[in-house]
Image 1: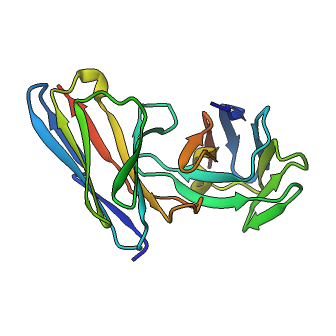
Image 2: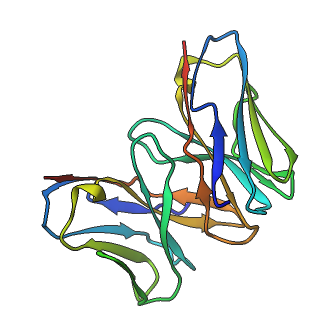
Image 3: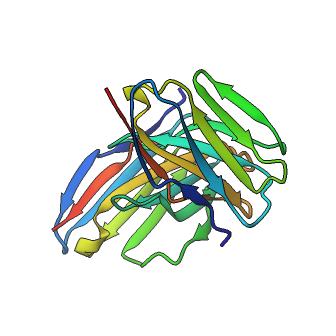
Length: 112
Length: 110
């Protein structure tokens, strides 16, 4: 299995909703990442987990809350988002210290 | 943050033509990656270049790493509509922070 699987593929949520994005990989990668990509822009790093511990938080607002329950799973909990948070949210994984990243197909999030 | 500058930002050419896109930095980097992203999908790693002067080929795509390891280029020969997409160069900063250039949006017209 050489894939990173993200669910859901599309999500529409209101500003008062709570939702979660899920990411799963079975490649034995011990580093996992959340990226945010706005239209016509490159992906921007949000969070890095290394060996299930949060190692990088790129000053992301607290309305985004990451969680890494085990080495295969990564969640992003969303609460009280703003319309400007609408974007493609990408999950990626890699071996720690290895520079080849595998990305999922993303979740297209729309906040209304 | 050490920026990666990509050029051109947009490129639209006819099928069968050749093209080159560039990725430049004022800093030396130990390695550089190239990704292609299609609409509605995540980036897919095409190649990693590590050694100054290195050339790697992937079918009709040729990747080159500059001798000084400050720049890289991607050349596509006889472009096809399936080559359409966003081409991103990227480098790892620090331990695990993958940083992308702004990308080159390539359109190949039939």
